[in-house]
Length: 132
Length: 166
Image (tube, rainbow over all chains, first blue to last red; front, side, top):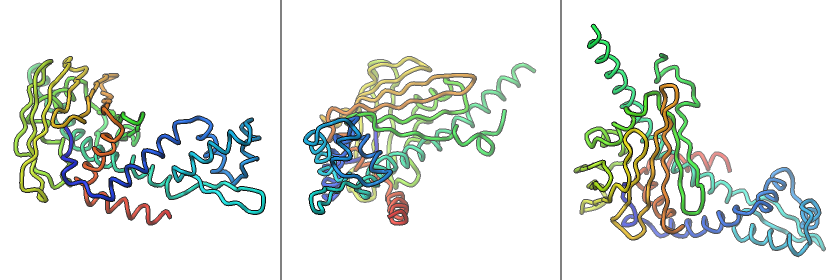
């Protein structure tokens, strides 16, 4: 029971969804979420991050690469240092995904709220008139 | 009793949405009424169709048949202005415990979700948890694409919101 779908799906939405999949996979790991939180405070190099999370450089490189592929992080190499920062746009897409669902369900549940309030009042009024 | 519409705290009217995993969507909200009333609004076709389709969705519900009991079936037929043919959504109620829980399937495609809605009453209020479990990650993503298209003006609002932030 949901709003009709599929038949109206446009191409760019499919691409958008494929990108979202990699984003959610990237977010499924506790270290990677920690890295994002850290980068939310300030940019950092891969060796900074490796140190902070008590990991080898190679291990941290792998995590950063997953985040980078998901578009959550961008990196830039200057000299010998690779600096990581948050990929802002992708985080907004995450928020947008949730927001779209919230819009639909808020609309539904606002209407349900009104109906339930009406039914509740009616039941109370009926109970009172019976008591009299 | 405070009047729900004007003076209830914001938290009470909050619709919370969470992607619990790749294949699960969870929506929760608390309603200011006992569980049997919320259950009634969810299980009687003539009441259900008054709230399930958002006014902004441009969809019309042509028919709504619901036999809300374990093993019973439902069938909703919609018309969308962009489509010539009506679209039917149907499935089976796997488990129905009055005033507590409804579990149903979506059978119009292989990728349909299993949905569980629970009603928990506490001090005269009812917390509703709507939980959808899709067979694949892609199916959940696609369900979003469909529902978002159902709400074009909300898309526009969102685009504005995001444009303002970036």
